[in-house]
Image 1 (cartoon, rainbow over the protein chains, first blue to last red):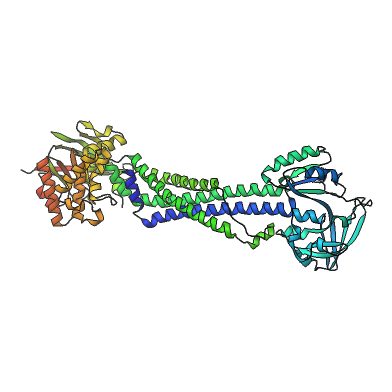
Image 2 (cartoon, rainbow over the protein chains, first blue to last red; image 1 turned 90 degrees about the horizontal axis):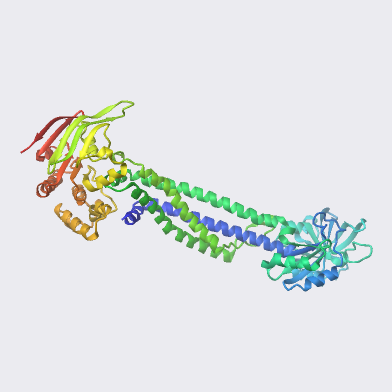
Length: 404
Length: 228
């Protein structure tokens, strides 16, 4: 009886019912989209960071992360790389020389990082060769001292392919050295900040030491299975054994901002979900309260003829639950369809270039989060109906019957 | 046999501010099978007395005894249960459930009583036939005239087989023909089935057909006449 009465009651005022259902649908779809977008955003951000710069694991001299001085380089690199190659989960690695430098051109100067790379290795690990937009990669360059700078830096320093670029840096011995390079090509990654701060030269073209031996500050390692990140880190750290000489770190340790990003996104998602739920609660309370107040006389009659207060309470709660049960699946279907579509075409946002993302964001959501949203909204509707339902049960029949 | 006994009933609204004495020491007994009209000008206390007898409103002082039970001793939920089992209500504004059909409205109280489907179905058809609405069984209130709605309300009030029916100005919103039809039905049920009716009214047509007329003024009974 209560089910029948509740079901018919919710269709008494279609506008009001559709308003509540609309609020539920908008709430669910907004949350599904927001969570999907955030997840896609973090995934793209992390994936960009891994592909362009960090890789999955990095090995440094233990002193290097604290104080990125040129003299904190890795010793016995040949033996170290032998051990890296033997790890089954390692796809590729690349050796890097990293030096803080000043680039000088006729139009200005700029502090940046000079990255000495092994072109063939870097092409595999970060696919730098595929990011050349003008000119050529090192393998095709005929210049004696080639350098790759970003399009963005070329614009800032008013340089182009074939221009000369003088770079000033400090050697291991502490001498200041000026080295002239010729721009072989311009690159562009999806990270604007990275592009402005990094130039590449072949490792052999940085004379960092008077002895002329190659200086390697960093070995970046790409893994087959990123889920075995920590496992591989541990194995590698144990293999290289001497922790006073080598420090193996994951990308999350190398760049805590990436980890922070994930944490912040989760926290901000929770806050947004909370705000949407609160807005939804007030919306539903308002509408349900209107529905109760409009039917005061009727509740008076129901109580007069013998309907128990708990039955009146149950009837109003049932009305809210029924609306949620109709609206939530619709909302989840709409949310899934929207996310499915956007997940395949992507969302291009120019504003995200500032945070290092220039490619489209592909929203995605896991089933658990998707279900949690649906269930949370349904529960929110239930909680929002408690106050109006309680108010109805407090009515006195004679006063309710005499209400307008 | 006395069904209802009202002893020194007093009801004062706003006792702390500007007191309004709606009932001032009313004594009244209603016997099984009566067809009684409570009459009097507006504000005389008719509806207050009716509400108090129906357990919808509490007295300030005095007692209302129904079936030898003082209803003031009941808790809120006991009072609801008592009303459900013993009293049928007919309201001035019909107060049917708008989303239910005539049949569903009539069987509603029986559903609350937990009666079986077969029992409900038999009783509903019997009552709707008695009030002349056998052919309107599946219509909702919005599809019925005022007179028809009030007849459904009478059928609903009778459905639970109550001790007595309380009707607050049942004909106030009805035209002459509907009033006459409703009175015919109520009198017939009263005479054939010995159902007790107590109603408040201003309507002379109703007063003319009542078998007992209790007149109230300023919260007091000023006359109590039985018509032979």
